[in-house]
Length: 429
Image: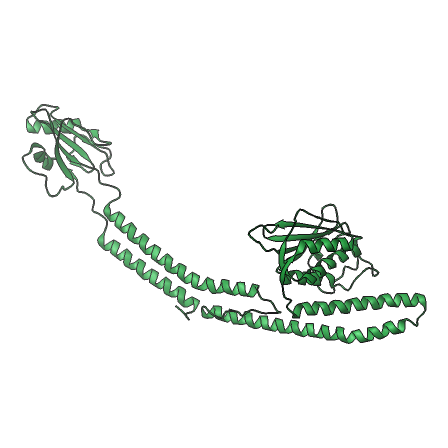
C-alpha cells in the first residue's frame, strides 16, 4: 500500500470486507441450517420395540438398547394412556409398555394419547427375562456442528479483516505519531530533520510542518539579529552618556545614572538572550547541589535540602545564571527568598520561594515573555528590563528542564526548576 492515499486504503479494505462477508453469507445460506427432525410416528416405532424390525432409516437419531430398569429421559413426562394403548395392540398387560416424552415447542401441551412425538421420548417393553427393551430418541441439540462451523468461519473472517484494518490504521497513525514527536522536539537553534514519508496526505502535512518550522526559525533568527544589532549599536552611545553624566549636578546626575544603568541592564539582557538562542553550550556532568549551596551562601539566601548529591548534564555558568536570576527576582520584588532542593523520580527540582505579593494567575505564563513587566504591582524604582525570567526559562529548557511559577501557600511566589538528573546505578543522591 506504499504510496496509496488514505481514502484508497480504507475503500479497498471496506470493499474486500464486504465481498468476503457476502461470500461467507452465501456459503452459510447454501449449506443451510440442519433440518428439523421429522416427528416419530408410534405405529412405525412399535415394530422396532418388539424386535420385529430394525430402526428405520428415517429415524437415525433413534437408538435401541436393553436395560435392567426403565429410566425416563431428562424432563420427560409419562404418557400412560398411550403406553396402555400400545400394550393392548400387542396383547400385553398394562404396565408392560411404558412411554415418556418431553413437551417441546411443536407439541405443547403434551397430549395423551399421542400418535406422533416431536421431541425426545423413551419407549420401553418389559421382556420375559425381567429386562427392558428401550427405544430412545434423544433431544435435538441446540448447538450443532453446523452452528459451530458457521460461527467459527464468521469469527475467522472478522478477525482477519480486523487485523487488516489494524494494519491500515497503523500505516496511517505511525507517520502521524512520528511527525508529532519530531515537531515537538523542534529546536530553532538546531532543528532536527522531519521525516517525509507515509501516505500522500501525511507527506503533505509533514512538508507543510517542515516549511512552517523553517519560516518560524528564519523569523526568529531575523528578530534575534535585529535585537542583537540594536543592542550592540546602543552600547557605544550609552558609554558616551555615562562619560557626559559626570558633568551634571549631583541630583540630576544620580537620576540620569539610574536610567542609564537600567538601559545598560536591558542591553546586556538582550545580548545574553540572543546568545542563548544562537550558541550551543557544551554540557558536562555537574554537581548541582554544590553549585546551589555555594550560590545560596554567596547571596545570603537560606537553603534547605535532604539531597546530598545530584549530577546533571549542563553548563555550570548557565545554571549559576539561572538561579541567580531567580534569587535577584525574589530579592528585588519580595525582599528576599529561600532555596530548596528535592528529588522527584528522575528529576532534580530546585525551588526559589518568597513571601512577596505574588503574581496574578492570569499572568503566570506571560511573566516569562521577554520585556514583560507587571508595572501595576512593581514600582519603576525596582522594575528591571523584563528579561530575567525569560533568560532563566531559556537556560532551563536548554538543559532539558522546565521553569514554572506557582502561588505559594500563605502568600508569595514559588519558581520551580526541574532538570533531568544522571542516574548512576540509581544511586546519584
